Length: 454
Image: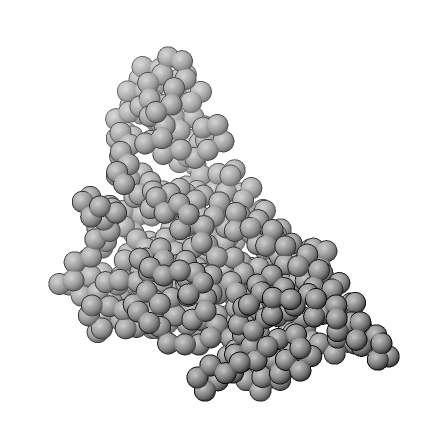
């Protein structure tokens, strides 16, 4: 990835522009271009208004943005203020997120509520744990990683260990709830995230030291994209981050909760306080902040899955901020887009799940005795099994999927075996339960047999 070009010096361009063509400067004073908050590196490839240079056009845009920008209680490594703006695209995105992620979810079936909620939460935590680790270099398949997390088996290599760590960190940070964030909490998240994965095991759960030089480089390890602040400044910077995270905010200093969560993500990535695991820790903090503010639906959205689809855009959002006077609006807009796409994908996913659940329930209705005796967990398992013939289930995987006791999980599976809807086999010391390839026929047969018996 190339470093974006730094914009021309604003003061000099403004002086020249206002001296030579003040009317043109005022006409160009718009914060957006075609509805977008463009960086100089994008703007220089577009045609400027007639009679205006690219530099003059940029100066007009920057002039208009000055009134939108607000300082944050952070400084960059040179002591300059870090700021953010609230242009129309930000306001529009926040309105959409407020409407869709903080209230009630309206669907044909109330699928993310009550009994289904834990099951979908576990699935989302697994997805985020996998993709967040893959963003940082974990190399394993989703299916192998999911099987490890659901079965509870030990990780076989460093990549699987990264994923297990990430899952445990996400669960740990959820338990913080409304507890004020402290530097010790952030260090603990990092310790969990990096346990048994670092070249220096002692680096887990501590800030980098003065002799530990950390840089962000491109994929080819040629160009330095970011040189973080000195290690000596990190304790103070971490304390400022926690103060910002915990601030309730009055009218004068109010920062929208979604923006606050995004800025926590940004600042931990900017400070890069650890030798490794900064990205995973930053994204975990985002989830803590967003859940603490009542955006419960976003717990079910994996932002890392979408970041992994376009990692260059993720990096560029950081670089645009750093090369344009610490204007974090670029990063905010990128993350808001990711969140909105994540919500849309979640709605689509839940719609499919609702249809699958209805299909399974309709099939089970052919056997009233089954539909009356099976609980929601067993119906969910059968719904999965109908789509995955031959899939195997264990007491541990069923327990983890629904957050129930081992005894309850065992009884669920034994009941399905007794009704001939699963097959039981021995694997080592434990039993494994398989979905037969003719499961739908067995359900229909059970309906006929029980109908005759009645």
